Length: 349
Ligand code: UT7
Image (tube, rainbow, N blue to C red; front, side):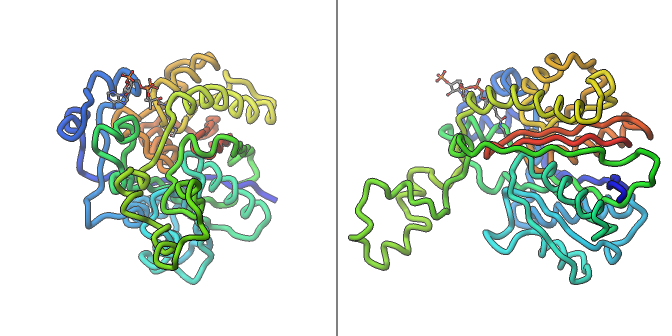
């Protein structure tokens, strides 16, 4: 069965540019600190009320579909990756299906945070290889700005994240060696709480020191989201940045080497590496570890911050638009993040 190829790619970032200096209006931080630790200079924030994760995904999808030379009616499966959905449920996949007037096709939502796009690509590739679908739309989109703690309390996280969307259309590759060569997915839930948004959720960790039996019905209803939880900022993401950093710099090179070895290739064969844009220092570490030249790695975290599930397709789209990816080039995609989950994909363009 043929593997999948990326037939079209698109991206969308909101108009509003938010500089590091802008963030100093809300929290105790500085342009110097943010640039030194992360490389980020600015990020985009979606319009507060008029843009959502789905609407941004639709914009990126339209461009990817057009560039694939197809139409929304021709798409026969949707995979939508995000950690910042419009609704707790249903997922963004069906909202995109509705917004784009698509047929009553399947819509799958993926919750793998920073590696969501790699997971989605892998799932899409399997559906193409099995012959089940011929035109799959994959979208990674995030509206982080709606749920970050912009006080000094949340500064280690809030300065990193930005909004945006990326999308690709997968189709069967011609049998000329092009397309997705392999994908590699991993997880380690042992550190799940090191980068997480706990609430609203069913875990009840915050009630652990209290006696459940004594709750009446009204109090149990409050377990979803209580005033106390909001006062304690438990509704915002939590990150132990240093632990995440330390694990990321090990797992990125590992999963890239796994993909290369599976295909009897080496780092020198990479045309462009598109690492998930978590932190420029992580990307630089990975580049150094694999001894890649500057022109072999594409980073754009400086302009957009970390857009989680959207970061790989946005960076891939920009690199392609800049002419950095030509037919026959070997493109390596890799991501690591919350879960922990991580993964890689090798694509012969
Ligand atoms: O894509 C998802 C995966 N996420 C990642 O890959 C993130 C990986 N981790 C990181 O990128 C880094 O850990 C951060 C950039 C998040 C933080 O950098 P760090 O060098 O690990 O800083 P830290 O958290 O150890 O904090 C160092 C100091 C602390 O102050 P004290 O205790 O030394 O006085 C923080 O309070 O920096 C302070 N700090 C800040 N200062 C100014 C934390 N955030 C900020 C801030 N501005 N935004």
